[in-house]
Length: 357
Ligand SMILES: O=C(O)CCC(=O)c1ccccc1C(=O)O
Ligand SMILES: [Mg+2]
Image (cartoon, rainbow, N blue to C red; front, side, top):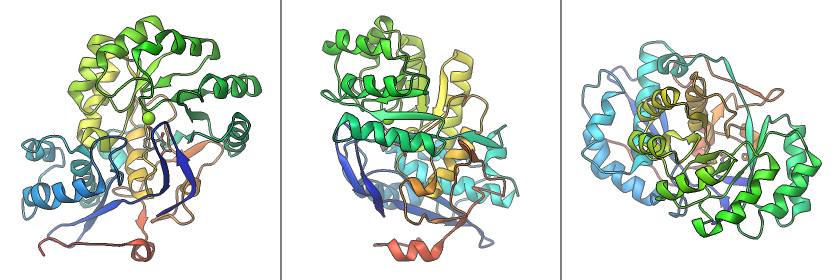
């Protein structure tokens, strides 16, 4: 699907988005939907659309096909013999959650233990050509009602970008995401971000640097939020033990599914780590899963949960997700609570495979 406008971060520029959508059937012909949020190239994590397709068809689908599944939480165990590949796993698990909720006539939010009927909408703004363009983009998003703005930063476009935004919007809930663009050698430089009263700085250091993030957090006032570093419950536990962060951005795809996301939620509530639900420039199917997750009580911060129209001319769900005075409704109908627009999918589909073949 073509993005309305290119989206840049410290590592890459995305112009269009390849996604794998998963539909599962039960014995009665009911269906459930999931989405694999891996990108075409491995810039964010090591998974790609290609590796996810391979891992799903060769290793994961055979572990589900024709099997009796009493509860979607069993899938974590079934997939445990396959290492990593969380986005491939989450796509299938998410589809089974949708189907299981529909069979039990409950919304996904309800089934996960959600307590909110609507969640605060936040939005991410990509790296821009100049600070002036950044201010212009931030202003537009504020005017659209978003309650928290995240801006992408990279060396050479960090303080010079943040300072003028803070000056123009003194009270705006503002944060920055570096997608691992810095190292501990930048410690003194990163400490200069403290004066801008950011809600948090997201993933300043490398994905493997839980120890370095702990060192940085010790020396920085601004809360550190981890994204790429947290790929499982155990990563979250280690980050809590080490003091690597005060906040975690949870994405079901990055952690291997909704069941694992819920385990991280429960841990973080207990350990006092604040949570919000991240985004992957995904379609409305994954967003519906995210909205259900974000309705859990521990998700106290606005997530990267924006309207369908933020990135798409036409989304693949009906109705599309909309932002109303900074809020997005959590779907209440059974399962993910939105209808899938098969006509739209047929328009953008480039490849499909059915199991059993
Ligand atoms: O609005 C969104 O969907 C999220 C924007 C975003 O920051 C992002 C988008 C794609 C991949 C990674 C990230 C990230 O959170 O780092
Ligand atoms: Mg991020």
